[in-house]
Length: 415
Image (tube, helix red, strand yellow):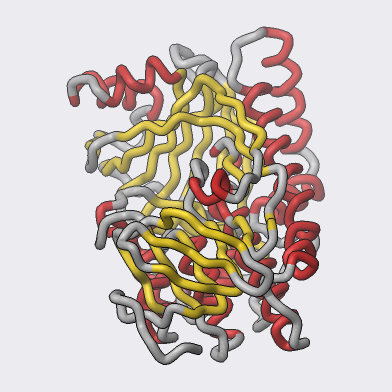
C-alpha cells in the first residue's frame, strides 16, 4: 500500500473498490474484509450522506440470506427489528370481486425455529451493515460518484467526482439497475419495460397480521401485503404506470380509498404512514457480469419484477458467490482482478439470474391479465400445487434460497 493518502483520508491504492453503499455493496465489502483482513476494501457512494436513513421501504430477506447476515455478524442486531413471515396466502380475483378465493397457501419452517423469510426495514439492514463495515475498518466515501475509470494490465484507475483518483485491483459496481458504471465498462444489457409501476408504502392497521403475508393477483398486477413489526405492513402494489402515477399524486383520501378497496377490511382501519412512491418496473439482464478488473453485483447485473420478492436475495447470492470466488483466489495467490478469476463468478451466477428473470417475467405476464381461459388455467395450476405437499415444500425451499449451488455464506458457513 502507498503511504500517501487522498483528500478523503483513504489510501489511493486498494485491492477492491465497491461503487454503491446499498445492502449489496455493503455486504460485499463486509464479506471480503471479514474473510481476508489483509485486503484493502473501500466503498464509494453517489448518494448524499445519510440518505439511506430516509429509506422507508422494507425487504423480504430469505432464510439463506438471514444465515449469511448471521455469518457476517449482523443478524443478531437485525433480528429484534425483523418480522418473521409465518405463512403466505395467494389469491386470484378482480378488483371489484366481493370475495377473493384462496388458491394457494404456504406455511411452516425450513428448519425448526427458522421461518422461510423475514421482513426487514431497509434502513435497519443498511445501518447494521454500516456498523459492521466500520468495525472492520472499511472506509465509505459518501456523496461522491465515480466519474470515469481506466483499466490497465495490473489495476484499474478510478476517477471520482471530487477530483480524487484511486487505484484498485478490482472495481465492483453495485450502483443499481440504471448502473452508470455498467455503461462505462461497455457492458450491454437486455432491457424491456412492463408498462407497470410498483407503488410502495407502509400502512398501520388495527388488528395484528400474525406474520401472514398475502399476494393478491389482480388484472393490473400483484398486490402484496407483507407483515412488519407491530400492527404494520409493507405494501408492494403493481399498477399500470399511468394509474400508479395518478394514485401517488392524488389526494390522500383518494389513495387510501383505493388502497382499502384492494387491501380489504380484515385487519381493521388502515392508515398510510409514509408518502407512497412509485417505481417503473421492467426486466434488465446484463449480457456480461464481468470485464477485466470489473464485476457487476446486485441490481447492476439484473433487475427483475417484484412478483416473487427475490430481488434482494438475488443480490445477496451475487455477494456470496463473488466473495467466495475472490477469497479463494487470494488464498491461492491469484490476482483477484484477473478476468479468468472473475469468470468463475460469472459462470456461477449467470444461469441462476437469467432463470429467475425469465421466471418472474412469465409469472407477471401470466397473472397480470384478465383473459378468461388464462385465468382458469392458472387457477387450476395454483390449486394443484396446493394439494401437493412435496411440490409446495420445494417451492418454499426455492423461495428461502436453500436450493441449488449455494455459496458457503448462504449456508451459514464461513468462507
